[in-house]
Length: 447
Image 1: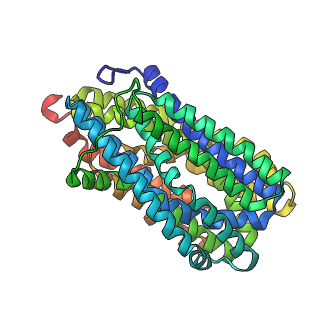
Image 2: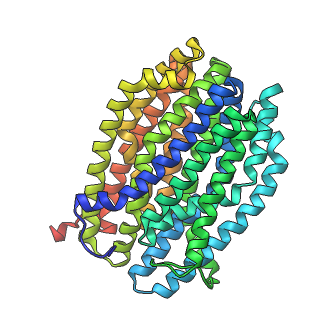
């Protein structure tokens, strides 16, 4: 696709749809993991997986960082007409991501037990956390590559590549979940091995594709040796890394509060809410992932008119999506709670209540996600990281610590609503303040 031309709202949706579908399907197969573990292994195993998952996600955040920051650098370099250099940057980023993944996987195996204990696991839950986490470490380098390639597929002008690979990996994961867990009875270990197998497909198939001659803007080859550029990638992509780290830290704080106020059932209910939330928020994440390279390209080309058009159209799409998600989640809450926890009436009631309250956050959430992605695409990683950190580590952590003391356990589920609303207001204020600098708002003399 020619990134330099004007895109209508319909064309923007068409371009971002593969990224949206990719992220939604990635969430769906993660949800299947949870469904299988919850219904075939039990709520203790389900709680254990959800307790250790934030730590696993923190280790994998390098892939988000290099994918987002690298995509912005590569797209901007292409927009400046330096295609050969863009390819060398791309190769450098991919190789660094793979090497870092191997190092973190080895370290993760060693610290898995003390980390699980620190998170509050004990007894059977502790052993299940350690078993699941150590198996997942086998696939960590592939996980990180998969996260990076999900963004680079759009940057390469081939967003459908990411979708096809994700579909294949997801179908593999879901099929093996059913075989390993429900048929062979391997329990939590079976779910972990199914996930690892899917990650190997999601990470190494694109690696092989980009290493061969292919009809895209990017191809793996001789890497650049530019430490300064690599540092810029890390700084600029730190917002996406911070967003995932922050979500993981917030999940840890949620689990601590839930264990305190509601016990193991609270952690299990939160797991169900998070799996449902993953599907809905994947729409925002996929759209931003697909749209960001377009904004970076136009920023490199200094085309302010197209940047303003892209921003306005994107915000309109996000507003419509948030409204639809809120309505759908309110209507589907009873059915979703039954699917995950129907085997335990009390847990099902708790999950339904949590879903009704939590889902209100979908209305403002997309604006916060887009704001962070926007400033990453424009090369301002510090503002982007500040938005990501403030939205979760700042606002949501404070809310989840304070609200339960004021209104009880329901305050835990309400925390995200307060945090996302304040974050959306911050994004609007930043666009008004910094917009003229980046051409997102016309300066007075231009009006």
